[in-house]
Image (cartoon, rainbow, N blue to C red; front, side):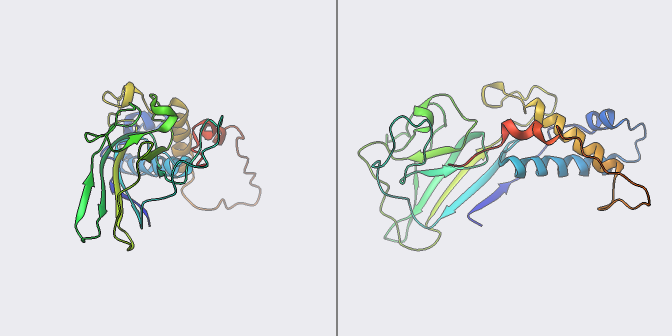
Length: 235
């Protein structure tokens, strides 16, 4: 897989107490089960949205830097993926840990990193985040390109020559404030509500199928629509 999870979240966006309160669980006997259901609901939401909820580290491995240059970027289009851009998925993107490539001499080199959304280039003024013109916007996939007039370094023409390691997610805390997250943003309430609904359904229905002679299964149509606004679209 070109995109691999390196470090999983250390916490969950909901506490066991919050999930138990939503599900009206009065006993402590099922806390291990509730913990597993919280993790399952969070993973389901992240995969469905193509988004990271809590701080985690990802590594993108590609065979070469993309090309060509800035030619072909359409005028007046709000968001495009130029041919020379590397796109980093699973937003919000917190920071880029390292961009590494193998040179023609077989040595692995590291490019300067930067904090996305600031418009500030790396220390050597070589690479810059051009997502939304460098404005403060970390809630979308991040595009990584060299600045105008420059090109990507020449790398070894072999598979897996380029890696990008970066941190994603809204933060680490689970108390509803998520201090330290980008701009103090919490996990969106819509996603948390969807997780609670999913956890309750999984708690009450622990089998894959419903067996009965006169059973009607009726889904509530608005449940999954809670996630619609937060789905990540890749251009």
